[in-house]
Amino acid sequence: MTVQIGRLPNGFRVATEQMPGLESASLGIWVMAGGRHETAPQNGIAHFLEHMAFKGTEKRSALEIAEAIEDVGGYLNAYTSREVTAYYARVLKQDVALAFDVISDIVLNPIFDLNEIETERGVILQEIGQALDTPDDVVFDWLQEVAFPDQPLGRTILGPTERVRAFSREDLAGFVAQHYGPERLILSAAGAVDHDEIMRMAEATFGGLTRGSAQPEVPATWANGERIELRPGLEQVHFTLGLEAPGYRDDAFYAAQLFSSGLGGGMSSRLFQEVREKRGLCYSIFSQLGSYDDTGMMTIYAGTSGEDISELAGLTVRELMRSAEDMSEREMERARTQMKAGLLMGLESPSARVERMARLVGIWDRVPDLAETVEKIDAVTLSEMRATGAKIAGEAAMAMAVYGPAEAAPSLASLSEMRKAA
Image 1 (cartoon, rainbow, N blue to C red):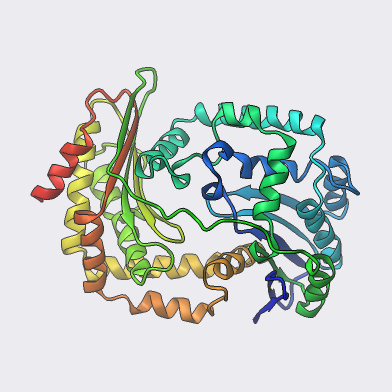
Image 2: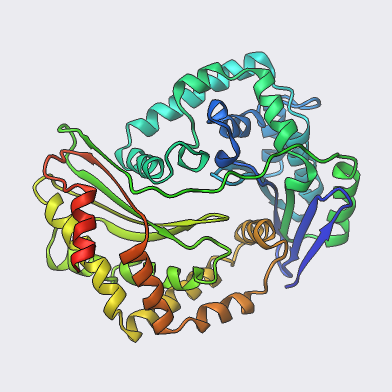
């Protein structure tokens, strides 16, 4: 299996990987524009656009878009993140051209019918309401907000209800004109695909596009912020702690991944064993590393009772500090093995491969070979991992969000003092 990369003169990029023996293919268009590319008045518009893509084009109605893919047994979906909006499908190999036509059509030719805008506005408001009724969704949005206050990276992807209620057809079309230029589009395809044929279709469909007018991203600025919201009616306190961590391009990225995994990446991790297994303070606790173009966040989450939140938070900080000092070679090797296994097992489907290719082309303008990625994971030494862990645990900016019956929750200042004393 070989990845091939192509580029049209206008900057439109194509990544393909033929996977012999497969009868199906996954393909999609990744737009390098998401929540962090919105201005404050635009907050939520990238996600609104994702919904509207399925609501009709110049040659297909909303029903015809769905039927075109489902009539051949395929699958069509999309998502919006803080840095990307993606539209993708999976079909049998004889239907690759059809899938390409449908996806390119919904990206290039949405009509933004006024009736459909109002219908989908209602759907999105329901989605926002559902998220607001889900405490562990709410608390992660709050954590993002206090870590990156008053900037695009700190705003929710769904947007506030007052903005969603106000978006017009002109607002939607304006965001597309600004951010959906060919230089920000990546076509990724894997499985039963032919690179030359994909390139021919891309040239015919996207070759005539002119570049957009997107402005450079606003650099992320971390803050030591907190938000504690009391909600006595909830059974659990939802506790999140975020620490500044390396972004995708940082040389310490893999060391940070290993540290986060060793700290709270599974049932054998420090946090799970100490907080849940030995003390019984929670049912769920984990650490994960989320990275962006220019920064990252190591997030620790736990759900616990109101009477246990102070003990859990303090123990979490102590384990964080202790792990940076004495995480063992065995723990690091377990984290390394888990990381490589997750990478390799996760790429056994064409859908996972198109996601990986698009993401890496967006970051590096190429797709590093799997062996190169594994080599970088293997190259991290224990001292490098501990040094990275020490920087995250002891020096990095820290933010906290807590939601629930949290009267006993410690302040961020008290947890910061605990860091200094450790």
